[in-house]
Image (cartoon, rainbow, N blue to C red; front, side, top):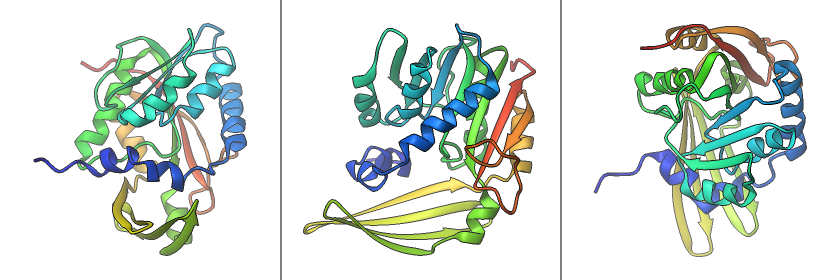
Amino acid sequence: MTKKSWYRTWFDSPYYHVLYQNRDKREAANFIDAILRELDPNPNANFLDLACGNGRHSIFVNQKGYKVTGVDLSRNNIQEAKKHENPTLHFDVHDMRQPYSKKSFDFVLNLFTSFGYFETKEENLSVLKSANSNLKEGGILVIDFLNVTQVAQKLKSKERLEINGVVFEISRSVQSDLIEKHITVHDGNEKYQFVEKVAAFSKAAFERYLSLSGFEIVNTFGNYKLDPFYSTESERLILIAKKINELH
C-alpha cells in the first residue's frame, strides 16, 4: 500500500480542525474586505479559491456578492464547506496542481499559506501554472504566504497545547528550504503522529516562480491590513500577480 502524503493525512484529520479551531474569523473577514478594496472586482467577477479548506474565505467573498468556487484536496474539508453552498457558491474536491476550469475565473485566491506543500519544485510550480490556466486573460492571482524571514526569527521550537481534552505536542524547525512542524496528538489512550511541511519560499523565489508561470507581480503587502512588505518585520507575504502570458 502506498503511504499517503502528509497533507492528505493531516488535513483530512479531525485533529487538524481541533488544533486550528480558534482561527480569527474577524481577521479573515477584514482581510477579505481589504483585498476586495484593492482588487476592485467587477460585480460579475468569478473567483476560484485554491486549497479553500472548509471554505471560510470563499464564504466571506461570496457574502460580498461575488460568484465563488472553492476547491480542496481534503474530502472532509469539502464535505463541511458544502453545507454553505448556494447558487453562487460551490465547492469541489480537486488537486490544485491540475487546472480546474480553464479560462473561467477573473481571480484566483491562494490564502493562509496554502502553497509549497509538495515534494518537488516542479509540483509547486504546477500549482501556479494551473492557476494561470484557470484565469481569463489579464486575470489576477492573490497569494497569502508566511514571511519565512520573520518565521525563522520568531520560531517557537516546542509547544504543548491542550484543546477540548486533546493534548498537542508540537515541535518546529526551519531548514534551508523547508519549514517543518511535527505534531503528536494524545487523545485519551490514543496517540497519533502528524507532520506539516511548507517550502520556505522567499519573495525572490516567488518572483522567479511567478515569472515562469506567466505572471507579473503588481503589488506586495506585509500583513492582512495590506501594509507595505518588509522582509525582516512583516508577518505575511501577500502577492498580487497579473496573468500576462498564456502558457502552452
